[in-house]
Image 1 (cartoon, rainbow, N blue to C red):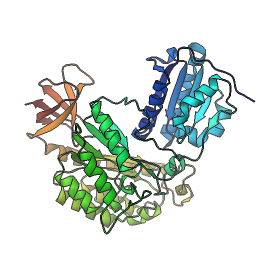
Image 2 (image 1 turned 180 degrees about the vertical axis):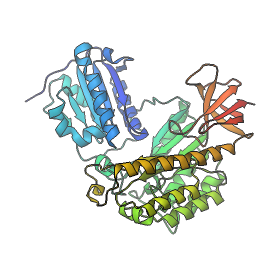
Image 3 (image 1 turned 135 degrees about the horizontal axis):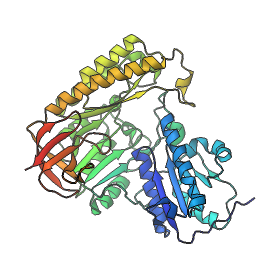
Length: 459
C-alpha cells in the first residue's frame, strides 16, 4: 500500500546534522544533491516543507539528543509548513524498525549507506510511490569527488573523509554495526576532492575516517610493508602538493599501525600539521585485551616516545575510556601513570556505559557508577594540570594562527586556532590586538596563557 503523497511546492529545506564530523560530511553530500534538485535552505524550521535530521546514536546522550531534536522539529508539521520529516544517519540505521512504530510523525528513515538516495526518495514520496518508510540496508556506499557537496563549514576549512566503516571491532564500539565494513576511497579521488575544496578557498583540510591507520587495506596495494605504509604515505604526500592548502591535519591514527615512514613525512612536511589524534583508550594491558585492541601499553608508550623524538613539539590528542568492565584499581593506576607519562595536549575522557549490541555488554565485573565517576574526576584533574603546563610553553612565542573571525562573546576580540588546535574540540587563540579577516593566516605573539586557550597580539 502506497504512503501518502506529499507535494513540495516551494522545495524549502531545513537540515540539522548531529554527532561527529564524519556525519557532517554525509549531511553536506545530502545537501549537495538536494541543492542540485532545486531545494533551497530555510533559515527557520517553520518555513521548510522538508525537515531532515541526520542523527547520531554512538552513546546514550547522543541518542537522547537525536530523539529530542526530531520531536522538537516534528511540531512544525502542525505549526509550520513541514510536509515531510526525515530521520537519517546512525539512529535510523540502528532503530528504524522500532522507531517506525514509536514515532509515527517521522515520514522516512534513511540509513547510513543510503543517504545519497535522498532526492529520488523524496521524488517518490511526492508521486505517492513509496511503499515503505524505512530505507536501511547493509552500508556499502561512500561518496566520491563526483558527488555534489555543500561545504557548510567556514569557507577556509573542510573535513575530508578518506574512508567509511571499520574493521577493528573493538568490544565497546557499535560503529562497525552502524557504518559497515571498511570502504576506502582511492588516493586519486581524495586528491581531486581536495583540489575542488581548495578552489573554493579552503586552506585547512582535516582528514577523517573511523580508523585512519587502516586506510587503503581494502584497496590494491594497501596495507603495511615491512614497517612502512605506502598508501598512507602516498596519500599524505600527494595532498601536500595541492595548491592553496596550508594545513593538513590527521585524525584517528591508531598507535599500533603508526609507521616511521609516516612519522618522518610529518616531521619534514610544511603542510601536514604537527598534530596527531591517536586514540589509545587505555594503558593497562588487561583492559586493552578485553577491548580487543591490537596493542599493549608498552607499545603505545614507545610510539609516543618515537613521535616526540622525530617531531619535536608535536601536539597529541587522544581519547580514554574509564571504568571499562574489569578495570581494577591497578589498571586505573596504570592508566593514570600512562597519561602522566604521555603528556597529551588534548584528552577526551569517556565514562564506560553498556551499549546494546556490543560484545562488552557481556563482559563481567562491571565497575560501579560511583567508582567510574570518581576515576573520571581524577583523570580530569590530572589532565587539566598537564594541559596547563604544556600551554605555558607557548608564552612569549610567535605562532601562526588561522583567524576564525570575531570572538564568540565580544566583537572587540578576534579568535582563531594554531595548527595544534583542531576545529570544535580543542582550545582557541584569543587575539586582543590587531586586525585580520576570517580565513587569514597571521603571526601572533602569545602574551597570556589560560587553562585551554591562549591570548596574543598580531605582529
